[in-house]
Length: 234
Ligand code: NAI
Image 1: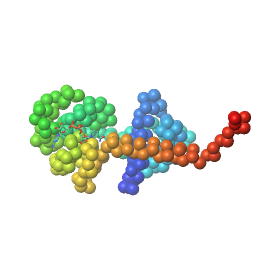
Image 2: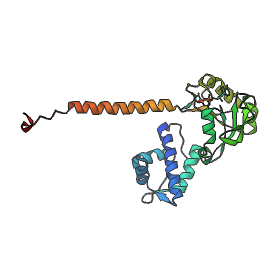
Image 3: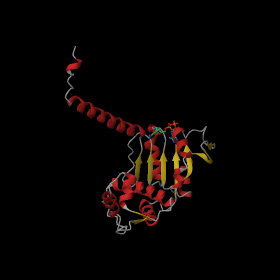
Image 4: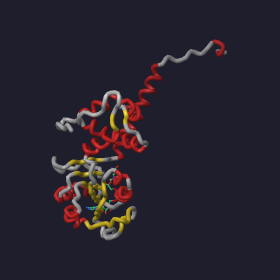
């Protein structure tokens, strides 16, 4: 596998899309797939797919395409999901509860093994959406990270607590943070941070819709008005 550190982030993001599509094909007993077919399914060009995959090595055979299982295995290795990751969550509130209930993480190799909160009313109680887990006191964080060999954490605490909690997570040994709090975290270059903000995504969506509307209206305004036909004039 080639990894020279100069791989564009969009290419890495698209790997997850390729993987999802390949997994669907594998479920349908498909052994091989061409870059053209993959591209059509994902609305990407086949040359884009070939270019993205070329960052990581040589895959596929001319006239045959890609071996579906081989490519799934390789992409999982590249993404680091060929192993199971123990993950923890801080903040057993509305969002934290919804995330705890999501079975899709486990299917992708992310096993939620611990949930923490600072609210004494929640500590010691089962997570409502996932009763196999009990809400732990944040005081148990450091010990649990070591005991359960946890490297990734989901941060679902209020914005004002997010920076402090993140620093604590990093000190405890967390190397990757999935941040939902609407703040820019400063945790140092050694820790990978992925942030999700649905409100920002909605803003982007509203921008695109507004722009499209503006363009359509501008096009309409440019069009010459239809003249009224004589027969209609009184
Ligand atoms: P919530 O108030 O329902 O839950 C927050 C939980 O964090 C509570 O259980 C609280 O006791 C706990 N908590 C507070 N301080 C803590 C600390 N220092 N240590 C441990 N636990 C602590 O809030 P909700 O709605 O679940 O939102 C959580 C976070 O997620 C907020 O920052 C919110 O802005 C963000 N959010 C982000 C979204 C996104 O699209 N990225 C969508 C929804 C919420």
